[in-house]
Image (tube, rainbow, N blue to C red; front, top):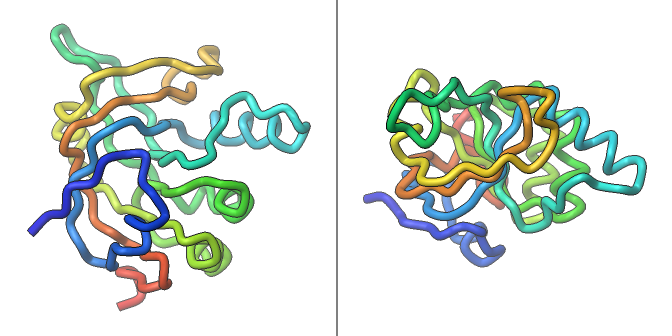
Length: 174
């Protein structure tokens, strides 16, 4: 049975999740990938973050252009490991959850545990299905990066799997 969770995800809800559980997310999340993440991290380190990510869920993806009648084009996950260098700091300073695909470094897993966070896995190759869950898109910054700009999207019943829970249980290590 799938759990239904409303975003933003609270610490209590994050701590109630178990690796391997199926979840449907509804609410707002941030989306970006490599170039957007790098630029955001540079702004954070400069002491002037371009967005506030505290309590947020970040989905690592770069959308395809929307077709007529779509809110967003295909929006499947990208490999999260490329963002591992930023992840511990972001969880340590308030990030609640991440969504992507693939294994995470031991440092990321420890940051998730330390902060009561969660890492969700989205299904690679299912971008068309995910785009049907998106009800609203707002570009927040870095429009010059095109598909890698930082956006806020609103989703309804967005299917994910708990990949790493707040206790460190990890579907990639089973």
